[in-house]
Amino acid sequence: MRKGEETRERIVAHAAEVFNVRGAGGASLSDIMAATGLKKGGIYNHFGSKEELALASFAHAAGLVERRFVDVWREPGIAALLAFVAEFRGYVRNPPLAGGCPLLNTAIDSDDTHPALRERAQALAGELRERLRRAAAEGQARGEIRRDVDGETLATVMLATLEGGVMLSKLDGDPAHLERCADFLEAYIADRVRA
Amino acid sequence: MRKGEETRERIVAHAAEVFNVRGAGGASLSDIMAATGLKKGGIYNHFGSKEELALASFAHAAGLVERRFVDVWREPGIAALLAFVAEFRGYVRNPPLAGGCPLLNTAIDSDDTHPALRERAQALAGELRERLRRAAAEGQARGEIRRDVDGETLATVMLATLEGGVMLSKLDGDPAHLERCADFLEAYIADRVRA
Image 1: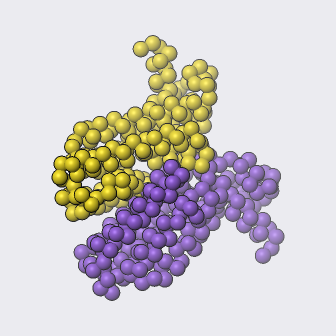
Image 2: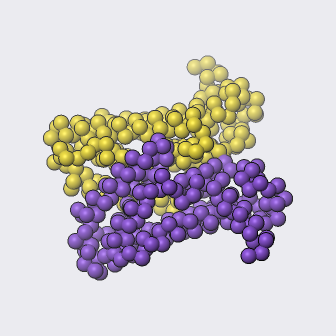
């Protein structure tokens, strides 16, 4: 990797944390300068604007989220649904990057104010829901999941419940809320989803 | 009401919207000046700092959330749980104030960065969970709710699922996600919570 690319990647990795902790609106250039140890010019050598840096940072954060679930999607059918819950259960103690879930944070930060960033967060949420929906359909094809389960609803409810659990746990600094949500989904899958 | 109090309340009502839309970190004094039509001095006559204004604004927003559920908590037992879901179902089309759910927004904005604001958001989340927990206990006392339902878990899961649904719906500009979450909780209460 050339030196310029290395510097660019280092800026993005630090800035992704700053944006995730302080929010897309709250993160200032001086926060990013402090995190990277670079001056303003050193950052703007690589990025045309703070907006461009925010988009590159979210792409980096989304990559960390996707990597987190790579093994989950290798599981077939209902096993993928359970592996997703198991992986998400660790999101507060061990988030994909400092500051918690970048999907949740960026969705809240961008929904009314940053259309380009919002589009990227929509794509990540859509991808996670689509993966869950496909796992449910595969589980139905394998005869593991009841025919009357609506995969679209299950995907939305699983993602919403876990992200809401992350929000409550981060707010209270207490993993118990997220753990209750994960326990609930596991019991629901065992009782009402499994054929 | 004296003129000074009126002005103070007008500033808080406008600032609460600005903070809810742009975030505690993203809202600037010029945004608040534009929303109130006041100059910097006109705002700082009433508030010692932007932090003080943010706290007063959240207190106003929390009051709007509490008012939203006043009739819900008048219902007894399981009816309160169902009324909570029904009221929350409208949170995207008709939020308590512009910018969506102030609990969700403030939790995400403040969790890593604004301890005083975070404390206020913790109190609001705790109050909603406690109301739900008490409704579940009342439903058990009335024989409407199964003895094996854990009220603490039910309260956490209901709030998490609905707030996560708000997040996904606001992100996509599509109330369908929140509606699926509300449908799911209603069916779950009918199937697994009702005695």
